[in-house]
Length: 224
Ligand SMILES: Nc1ncnc2c1ncn2[C@@H]1O[C@H](COP(=O)(O)OP(=O)(O)OP(=O)(O)O)[C@@H](O)[C@H]1O
Ligand SMILES: [Mg+2]
Image (cartoon, helix red, strand yellow):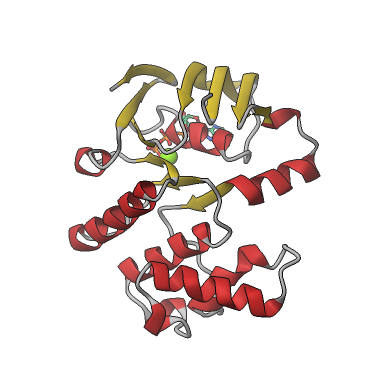
């Protein structure tokens, strides 16, 4: 059984008289443990696909299944629980809270759980150690480098141990050395069993994935 399934998923955005078909009848499955890249020109629907996958958007047509559950049939509060249990997010702009330390940023996803404060701290520390930042847990985002900031963001995304990690251009703001560091980290997480779906426009970055889904004008044009 596949972990993720898109069943003829379409998304149109309406802006006044303008109708944009951002995704057109997308069909695909992703197995547990896969590392998948999504590529395509600007405006081809990559982020739309990722936000649909992350239950941060709504399809105009079709169904999306995660672990055999039709996620858009869930009530909003169930969707929030589902998102917290299954999905971690990493974005191009790192989106750390500037006035919270690395540790506090990583603890954020745990604050909505019933976990004790002590347990939250232990987990956050573990997640920061996992990305090699044990010595920087008390730094603010403006006191660490871009590559380190993205590693804090990855640490925050995995602190809940979600089985699926979604990444939209995770190396988009990094120089090539830091980009390689972040990609090696994602590859290690994948080797440990994490399912990763990553949007990228960079062929080198896509090579870390098992296969690439290519989009053009909202349509899947190849999977290889
Ligand atoms: N909230 C929105 N409202 C209206 N149109 C949107 C919205 N989000 C995306 N679109 C449009 O849908 C299409 C696909 O956008 P999307 O963001 O998925 O592309 P993308 O492949 O991620 O592009 P990029 O590489 O530039 O990030 C584009 O034409 C875009 O303008
Ligand atoms: Mg995008």
